[in-house]
Image 1 (cartoon, one colour):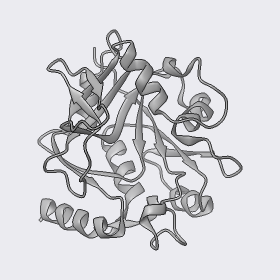
Image 2 (cartoon, one colour; image 1 turned 45 degrees about the vertical axis):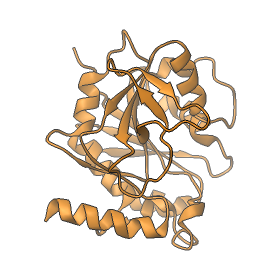
Image 3 (tube, helix red, strand yellow; image 1 turned 180 degrees about the vertical axis):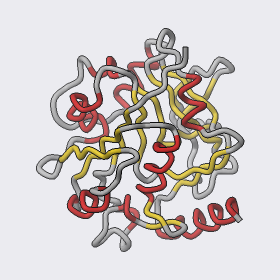
Length: 240
């Protein structure tokens, strides 16, 4: 039976340095694309997937995000307040684990933006996640054709979906799209304080329990002010 997560963690604490000057006085998750803040695009997708509760972490300009989500009911938003500490992408999850429970949960970057294909990608992830074989399932976007991405990729993906991290000076065909399902068990031996989630990716990969699912649709990397316009054009074209 597929595991259908009913909780999600949304990372919204970053400084958005590359998005300046838009983020001089506004946290990156509240930057608007096609009339809606990036964070709302993510929360809307979670609501459509039937997620009841989203834990949103905050650090940079936290009150703006707290005020923005205060009235939201679908999903209900719980704040993980990190204004007094920088925890990184991994430490943030460890702090939020008591709110997330002991079942696999969705994990999303607040600034990820994608257009679904025929079927919603969150639904496809839930159907593909097999806790007997995997601890982490990442949504993988093809580097070719993604909007605003010009890097060398993050992973090579085998036909069974297992992932291998890009080697130095290698070009691989898939980039992590900022959307995943994680098993909370992968954090049981985690350090205190700040660390990156890539630590968990590496350990799951070493145990052959790191898998990917190819995104169906179009992923947009909204990393800079120029990328906002490109993402907006793609998004508006998809709903025209």
